[in-house]
Image 1 (cartoon, rainbow, N blue to C red):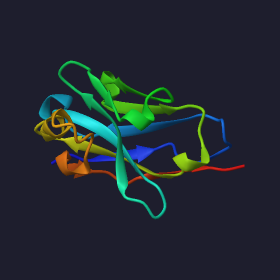
Image 2 (cartoon, rainbow, N blue to C red):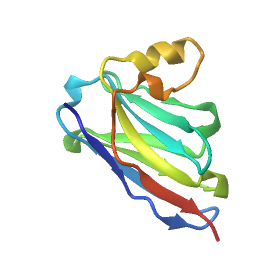
Image 3 (cartoon, rainbow, N blue to C red):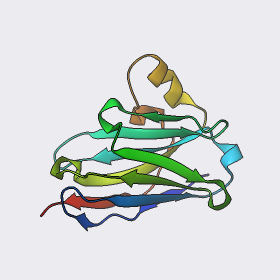
Image 4 (tube, one colour):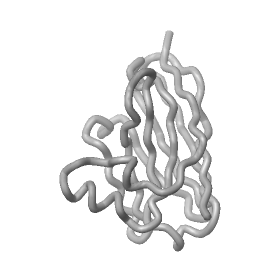
Length: 132
């Protein structure tokens, strides 16, 4: 069984930057992908980005392109989400999640975007608040 946990959230002013971390248990060879999601107050959870382990391909939701960058440290089995030019609407709880068998890519391939339905294991989220 896998586990993962997001960390690094906090309070940041509009226009600022923040880097989130997600440490996953087990080996990267044992799951297909790991992704970031977020949930704003009163809204549904939405996909941010997804990292495919076998080749390092990264998918970004259209609304996240340009300001958010996902990366991975293989030695630490940790992924990061670098968030720049933050806006108040980026406020929310950020989660990382593991896709064990690659289901997320099928959903993406159908043009439905990064969906939580394709993920198998979820970690505790970390709160990001963008406010002056």
